[in-house]
Image (cartoon, rainbow, N blue to C red):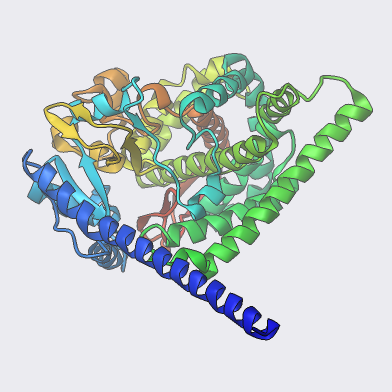
Length: 516
């Protein structure tokens, strides 16, 4: 037998083996795909239906995605009137389905089941659970590139460790020092506003720069200008994430990355390099000066923990992404909608201004003075109620669990739609869609029928660690603005709230400012 024949025979054997492996892998993927898009939806639907839970029917592969996409496209096609009844526009699918299926129903994000919960008692059970029955859902590859495994998405011991660190960075003592840095950022913004007097000003972009500068100063010891590249990269990556939320993957599609996945990977690499440069700069400063260690800001605490082998360098990168993103997006949205509301309701703008002038003796606010701004606090809470920056609080069941009278199967995603809860007339009364800060006159606890009727920053053990920071920043900015300017809506303003990463004005927020 010739050597050539033997080589040919070996090659044929290897080729047949590879073909067999390929076929087996393909069959395995097809079976897995069939289970995912047919068997699981079928069994979950029947299991929940036996408990009286129904919802919009599952459509093969796409679930309710196409229906939701069309409803949102139609509802956001044109601006709405100057009303705060925004659920039919921002969440038209939930607004419609709740009327049909009630306060608890099943819907489908592709083949993934989602249990929508608006019943306050069930919400309380889900969000206050301390047994680990409900945790943060795992992120898909693109979303994970945006937030990593930081505080927002981590679970278990890792979350506990990160939360302790964040609590230390945002405690009362740290916030007291942060007020001065916040005031510096606001002062810079107001310096630019001298050129805007009497002119249309797109306020959401102004607040975006402000909040980015504040988080840079207070958490990272830099400035908006220094961090602009990182911010821009994160914003671009955020747009890719938003456009991929309802996309479905087919069998084998993971072998060839999509255009968005390739771009997301490149952006992630650039963001990581940008953050690593920040780390190197801080470490170099430590080597040269060796003064206060790594610094007493959040970034310094992260580096110190890494030096003590408590967290990894990747953990630092993930936390930086999380805080750059969450640290400004929510506060920027809060300030934007509060300014729009005060422009719509000048009587409340004037009440807030009088309080600021009466309570805060100097132009530079103090943490003690800000704490006495009762009217301001009521206005901010009402803004958060009507236009909550975050639209959903998502959990996933880690095992078979009980919620109220229902049995929740393992792996079920539970969604608390914050906007819907905040606009529920059974919790807030018939004036639910009116701007009425007086409803918070006796505090948050007495504003609605239950504690979980107002959850702009979540509820329970995982309530947002930046809650006090965000509201304090909003008070600093608004108090300084109200001392110097009045503002009205521009004739060019179109009322069009829309959900992207946070709730934003689809066509911008144009106001006209006038110096006092």
